[in-house]
Length: 49
Image (cartoon, rainbow, N blue to C red; front, side, top):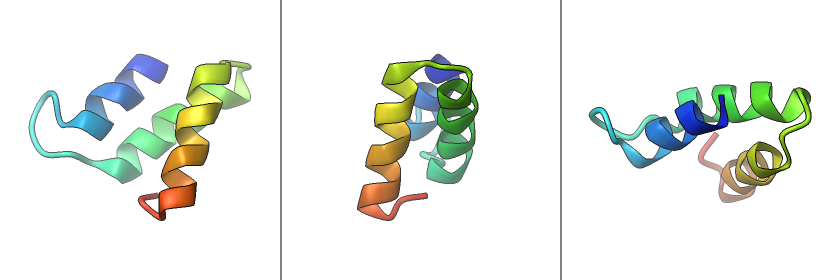
């Protein structure tokens, strides 16, 4: 899930989609992934999500 968030936030498969990235990062963070929690927080802090 964290990897899917990374793909969406960097536009690896097309245009960048921060809303979808935030969804995946949040799902992974809820399951205990610390990296995803950090990336989700970063998106929230920048106002991208």
